[in-house]
Image: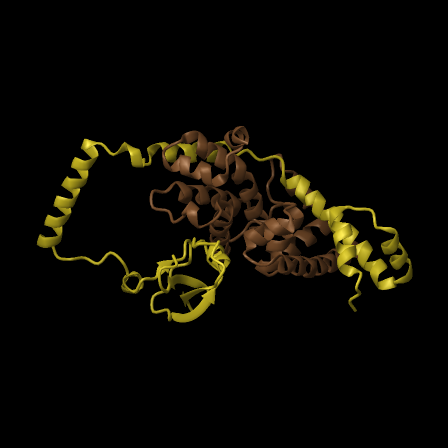
Amino acid sequence: MSCFWVPRIIECARTGQIPTAEIRQHLAECLHCERRWAQEELLSSRLRSIRQASAVGRSSVEGRRLILQRFAASPRPQSFGPKLWLAIAASLLIGFVSFTTWPHRQTLSPVESDWSAEGFVAVPFALPLASGEFVKVVHADLQPSDFARMGIEVDTASPSPISADVMSGEDDLPRAVRVSGEQF
Amino acid sequence: MQDRAVQDPSDEDLYQRMRKGDRRALELLYERHEPALYRYALHMSGSRSVADDVAQEVFMQLIAPHQGYDPKLGALEPYLYGMARNRIRMLRRTRPTEPLQDRPGQLDLLSDLLKNEAMAALYESLQKLPDRYRDAVVLCDLEERSYQDAAKLMGCPVGTVRSRLHRARLLLGSTLRMAVLR
């Protein structure tokens, strides 16, 4: 049974507000809502305890130190100097020589190579496909927010849905996305 | 107005400064988002090791030279939560979780709290909720985000957040009531 007052009762309980006179009157008349109110109050108080307990007692100093250390070690765009350009040129030359003289080795799996060749962008942190796993590609009109949920950024200001091909594994979780046109 | 922008720069401004090598901007982003991302990952996964991993890895990805965020295309925070959500989903499938109660010898109020049978039942029930419902409870009730904020982070309309939360609360409330009566 669902009563018109239930959403108001829930909001009242979860925000810790005192019920208004109309709500109180309804609670006195409706057994179902009275029980629901008691349940919501109990749940709110327990969730509040969890919230308070999880807000204390943890130090992120070590994590912060590691991030800053990694950041300091990572290359910066403005640090391009003559030595860096020389290093890049030398790497390119070595790479070119290696490529033309050594047997070509494929570093990406065949499936991943096909993805990028066909314009798919991998979903960050998605599980790798198992060997021999079937994939399916579904064409869909996705909202920019759908991309954000997958960790892929597109223009969220865009009002219209974005036409895209979504590649999923056998578990139906997305692995890669290809956007049609110039909307990325 | 300008003073305020200097004192309280947006995430996107901080991100741009960080990309140019500003260490302080990264520190500010970390201070602003890491604790909440950790708690989000903790409640979404029920595991401290997963939460530590997620909070750290999201920032590792953010500072990586070739990460995919572009400030022109949207706010940073939904991007961070999107990365966290994907990472949690992956780790929940691949890593066994340890009960939060089993953390002897540390000052841990949450672990202490979950020694209570009803609280443990409630937290276990939260972990068993479908992702979309758990997301709503964690963001709205445990992180006290507004419906509008939660909608941005979840990538769905405000009404959907509200209905998911109400549905989730009904499920959690029933579990809790039974645990208390037991």
